[in-house]
Amino acid sequence: MIFTRYLYLKDEVEISLTTSILEKKEEAVFWAYELYYSGYKNETFILLWKIYYYFFATLNPGFETYFMKKHKEWLSDISDSYDHYVSIIVNNLMTRPFNLDVFLLHKINTHLELEEEELEEKEDLEDLLTKSKHLDISKYILTNNTTTTVDTIMKHFPQSKKNDYTKIIKFLEGKMDPGIILISRVIMFYSNKKGRSLYATVEPEDVVMYETIIPSKINYQPYKILSLGCLYPIDKYNYLSLFNISRNYQKNPLNIYHYSWLYYSSFTPVWSKRILEYNGIINHELKTITFEKYENEENFYDNYGYEPDEQKIEIQQKNIQVIVQERTWLQVYNQHKVNGLIEVDDDIIDAFEQIKLFE
Image (cartoon, rainbow, N blue to C red):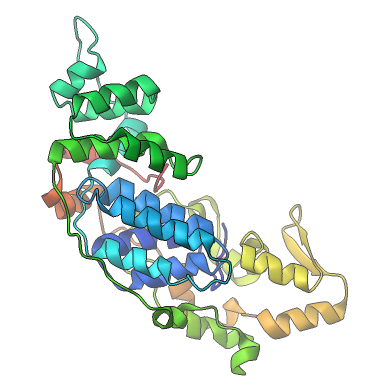
């Protein structure tokens, strides 16, 4: 379990960001900045790339160039004046159509054991491409993502541009599974659809509200910060029960939230920096934070004593909301399959259990 700046669980923030974008809800921007301002700035951009390739790329191939341009501009900034670029990407994704094709192909191949058809002779990739066997193609790519595989695919689809593929692979090298990018391109070639080419704009002043609240700067006691900063409940749209999340491995996550929150926050860059600033000592064996001097401890809690155990129940429920099973993967599939090319039998979708978001 890793707590973010306002004591949400990091993996749950990532899921809420993803599902809010798919549901086209304005709180997606909040979740993006909860991750970003917790110190996971690069990780936020990589997560947005994953969301793009798993859900949006097949219908919006032109957005790739725009996204890469904005990401490069953000990387070149040394003054944090491009923080609003996160909102630009999130808002532009929310205005675009998406499907579950790449997500489903990846999860079926990695989470389920399907019976394979008996073939007299094993089909090669060219045969699979000719017969449009999407599931088998995706499995082939995930297990044989080689230069030969890329060349075969690019040769099969005359509209393909290998240089564009090479550029994005190099740009995201080590940060994104190239097999997912390649699968998204194959499905895009089959669907041959293009999303909107208009782009939403966001100004720096539009995202000031998401900046981290510092008690000393607004003359507030630190225990009031959660009531000000926690704008949304973590599982407003009831998706968390579908995923394999970190709290599932703890006997009493609420107890950790109440009394061990600082240790589990120490893994987050913004909290780690705060602890070190006051000469705090992180003890991973005992799962505690201690301070060299009593004055250091007092000063730390005078600034960052959020006191989650003393918060009103509605605030605690925003952070670590009780998870209720109200959705199934079949419901999610039926809700969002309208733009998809891939058709999956209901019994296969029903076989999905709790899965990792992008693993």
